[in-house]
Length: 224
Ligand code: G3P
View 1 (cartoon, rainbow, N blue to C red):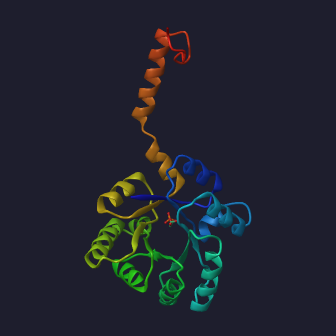
View 2: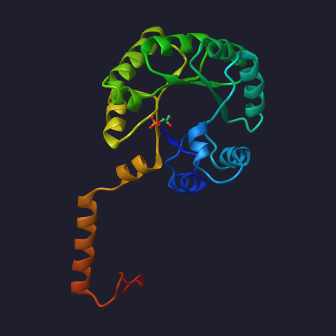
View 3: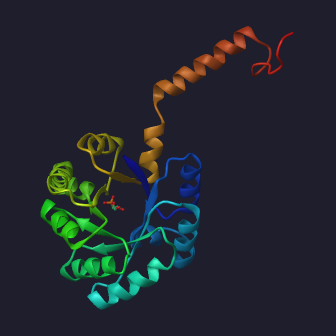
């Protein structure tokens, strides 16, 4: 399963990219609005830092506007995937952009039917927003399971990118269902790295080392 970072924060992107954990990035206008600086420059910088797919979202809601923006965003780099909202005009833009060899990620997916249509239109990725479904008392992960099954049944060449992830258990559930990608807020990735027993275990190892050596770390010289 691929891990994308759901963030426009350059510091976080560099931090986790240096650990080799970042297969791609998803951004949206909300995430960009949280950062200081010109959004265009931030998008350009993200595309330079991370080699994998970078989703950049259009703001237009009409077909012609989405096409113009999609073409412009695609010029940021070969790894750009244009993020298009799940609307009738959006589906038309997905098909037209695909015909121009521009990859798309259809966002704001809340049902398996929407994902089916996006895949049929030619999207490279569909983004079901599971946390927001959980928020309204539905089970977001059920939608992911349905989408994965449908795509397998018909061998759609479209990846299931699970978005609106709120906690590490969402990641485990998405992985068990066979989702292709999870896009994670940096704080969820940080929670996945940490475990209290790791901290306790490390502290004990260091304490025990202090009991047997005056040196703070093992001597690196090889004894003769
Ligand atoms: O990738 C979509 C994500 O940014 C939305 O997350 O937590 O606002 O539903 P959330």
